[in-house]
Length: 292
Image (cartoon, rainbow, N blue to C red; front, side, top):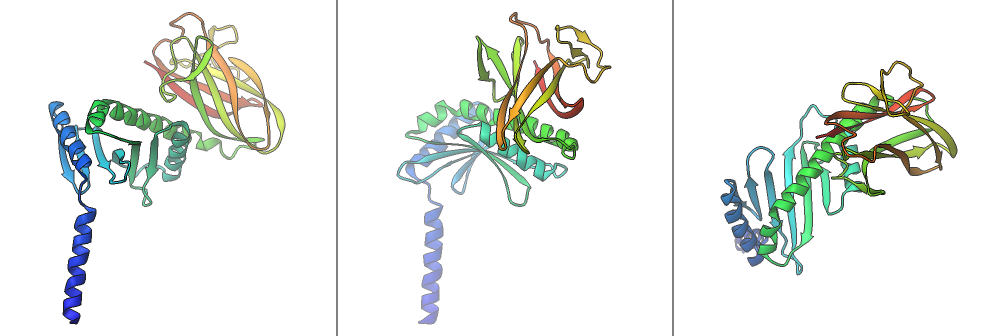
């Protein structure tokens, strides 16, 4: 009898495992139609367990999973192995920054710090909906990955300023376009327009106070824009592109630093630029951006 019960338990566990791995009719339809679509692009796709693994070469590697809920959820994921040379605490901070900025897409780092997952989640009603939006999903995931890379480099580069004695701590800095007198987030903070860009900084204040901040905008050749818009050699640490006063509260504060550029197109030529922030002539944060 004991042997029979044991056998029944094994069979039951096996059945449960098989049931858990079953694919819903909608999921199978999604996987099949998506496979047909990506093969037209020259990519490969294969069902593995409950998900569809897609490989387009290089970074075009994705997983699609459709839940069996009453309202099925599409999980469209980009999974990558993390470079072991990267600082995991810095990467986690960058992930948190990205998650605050983006909606619909979530980034996570595995507990062992070896795998990065960027996922797009939404309710779905049909397989056609998934195929129709396939390129949009992959585009959004790529943008999120690019933002994450920039934020990681920003966090890593600014670590050297953490030991400065300042009345505030910078959490992150963000780039905006200024279009038609409206500040709008551009391409997940990626590239400002060739006219005018705006910058904002998120601070954690160590107490209430008003602080004078100097800002330098430096062009790809390493020259600083003066207050009149001319390019000058960066020889005087007290000469800034513009200055501002920040009134900070004893909490996390999003502060709009200011804008710089021209009403005419083409002010910013292609290349790597950077904003440098100064407090009492002491450099305390760097934010880089690129014009394509």
